[in-house]
Length: 103
Image: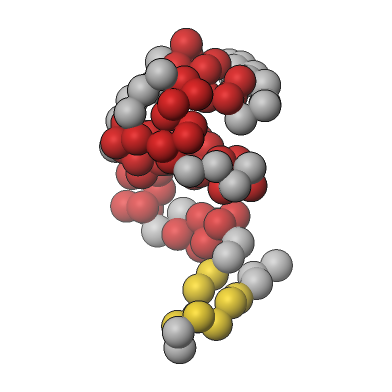
């Protein structure tokens, strides 16, 4: 499903999974994804959850005891995060956190 929204004369893809599937056909993009994509995927999920709660970056930061700029870096994939930080984020977003190893 590839939903599009026309905004200011520009078509924007709204289905990240479709976009990702298309991009991963490129071997170079797949290599980058394998290296960095998991973190970006998690960052994007946090962004989606925060927006669904209609919560600002500043409000989330206040709930977990950090700064708005840290949340911005987190959501853009430019900051590594610890499990304890993710637990705080999950709690602030009224969510759980599940981490698993896949073989």
